Amino acid sequence: MASKTVEAVLFPGIDVRVERVSDSSNVLLVEAVSTVRPGRCPDCRKQARRIHRTYQRDLNERSLGSRRVIVRLQVRRYFCDRKTCSRKTFVEQVPGLSERHRRSSTRLTGWLRSIAIELGGRPAARLCRRLHLVAGRTRLLRLLTAPMVPDRAPRVLGVDEFAFRKGCTYGTVLVDVEAGRVVDVLPDRTSQTFAAWLTEHPGAEII
Ligand SMILES: [Zn+2]
Image (cartoon, rainbow, N blue to C red; front, side, top):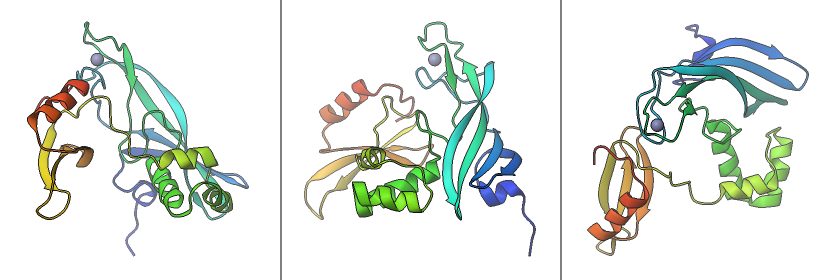
């Protein structure tokens, strides 16, 4: 059997380096450092160059056996160097692991959402407790709402038409081309609807 790095086992395809794994009776603590390349300001999309500071944030991860898993992730806060931008600093996110304003890893959030979809509020919360997953009922229910539409359009925005049913009404699907993710779905294919969406979600550089 080929030997793999601990990163390849725990975080396949994710840009982190694992520094240490420590183990107490009910918590596995994984200390990791982000290795993602400097990103762009979420507001003005300027490429980040200067680090403001680094710090650690704790993310709940999927449990391992009877133990909760916490990823203590070291991330960088960058300056936005565009003078006209109202955002002075911003924190990097590690794709596939961390999300803005979320204390669960992307993978744990995916699990929780699936459980909430199948079971709803209270039974879902009970199952999560049994599985040692950190999630209250309110949080689980909140995950049931449609995926959040970002405030800003992605840098490269893909636009495609689709039929709600074969030969029926058409809608428009908006895609973040770089992330390979659906951003939003518009109820028709008129240019007015799309223009209105672009006004509310600025930031697309290439459409
Ligand atoms: Zn900015």
